[in-house]
Each structure stands twice: as C-alpha cells, then as structure tokens.
Amino acid sequence: RRSLEEAGFWFGEGLDASEDYDLHLRLAEVSKLAALEDSLYLYRQHPESATSTQEFRQVVHKAVALERAIRRRRGDQATPDDFIVVASDYLWAAILAYSRGDLEETRACFEKSGTFVPDILDHPELLEKYIRFRLPDEFNYALPFIYKLFDDYLPGNKVMNRLKNKLTSSVHMKELFS
Image (cartoon, rainbow, N blue to C red; front, side, top):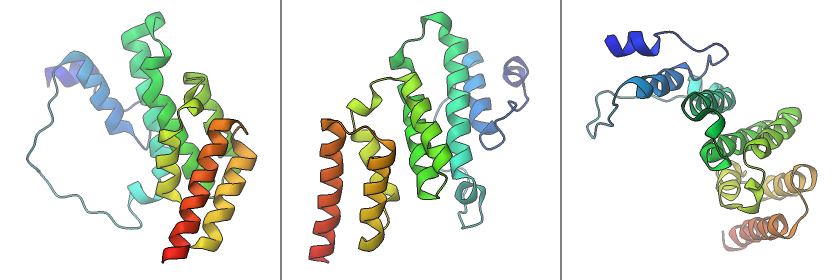
C-alpha cells in the first residue's frame, strides 16, 4: 500500500490502453518488483478483447508511458540508447497502423520513432520482425503490402532495399514451396 501511495495510485492521463504498464513503471521507481515464474492466473484472449481491438493504442500508449518514465529517471542525461525501446514501440505501432490501413498514423509513428533514435532504420532487425509478424499470409496481399510500405514510408537506401528484397524473396519462396 505504501508503494502504491508513493507511486501515485492513479492512471496516467492519455494512457487509457496501457495504464497498468504506466503504474508498474512508477511502482518500479519507488520499490523493487519481481517477475514470478509461476502463473497466478489465466488470461483469456479472444477477437473482441482489448488486446485484439486496441493493440495499436496499447503500443503507442506503452511508448508514451515508457518515455515519461525515462524522462523522470534520467532527465537531461537521457541518451538515444535509453530510448531504443520507445523507438521500437513506435516502429511496431507504425506497422500496426499500416496493416489496418491508417496511413496517417503509419507516417506519424515512423517519424516519432526517428525522433527518439535517429538511426533506428539503419538496424532493420526490429522492423523486419514487426513486418513479418503482420505480413499477410496470402501471396497476392503480401507482395503489395511490402511494396507499398517500402515505397511510401521507408527511405530508399541500401539497408531498406536489402530488407525489401529479403522480405519479397521470402514471400516468393513461401509461395513457390507451399
């Protein structure tokens, strides 16, 4: 109880999809937290759950909560390395927005990612993971998904061209050997 009072048992404004994450970050600032190996409860997932219907908002709000926590803890001493997870969350949010057709949010999240870690796209491993996770299974949808994403939202540099080629090759190979 004392930790909750010290951390402030309130939900952060504007974090309606990730308020529990924000609370855990604030609790970690005033006390020790531990991850338990044992499962204490079961978590039911279904297509109408908040995790399914609000995934984009949850990821964006998680990034906002984490940014706030870093700024509280590190202040002016914060470096781009401190914000790599925040930048990664915005990359993930960009792919989520793109996969649901929200092109304005796609652009905004890519830009936001770059404000935290300007060279985030020079290391495409995270982006590749996120794209593969959201890549449509159907060949006729997967290729346009990749082409439009790279042509409209990502820089046409060597790193991104290699990633685009790698992803399109894997889609072709999957189709060929299925």
